[in-house]
Image 1 (cartoon, rainbow, N blue to C red):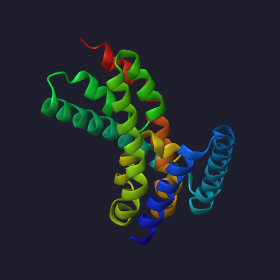
Image 2: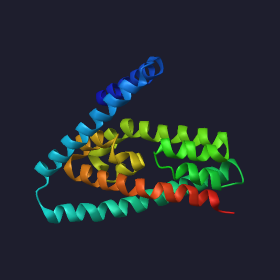
Image 3: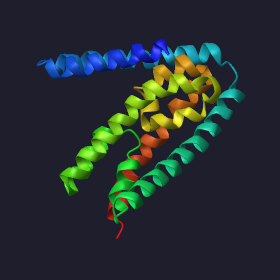
Image 4: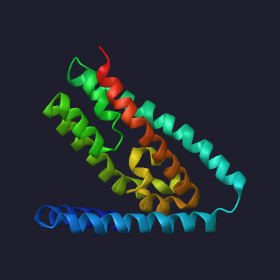
Length: 196
């Protein structure tokens, strides 16, 4: 619980600094460099912890099944919300199928409608933020299953939290899971918006 409070405080501080900082280019560069360094370190740790090719192959299969489950679960969630709130399921499905990739989903949906763009951006930012808070709580019993919470973010921004609390298998599964979803999102979101 202490870690959740620390992560929440750091995230909130980051949001405040982001709003106050006028030289966002420097912050963006530093953030990207730090993120790449973290991914590199996680890669080294995964290899140190997982030395079996058979284990890596089983993790890849698990990641494929998990990605499929994430897509189905996100679509169901979007459909349920759409049915409860309004008659048109299409935009809610598109928002849900953004699966954490807010920098794609928000701008893409804003082409159609500013409201949907804002909703797509906000709900997917919240999905990423929720992963930082919820994954550490679930990792002890559901380290692999809880990866789905992060959606596409499990390949990059939420990977360090997953690696820390889920271990090497969860980190490798999360990396592949996020990669697969990152390939699917630019296909699924526009496809849903083209439905009649």
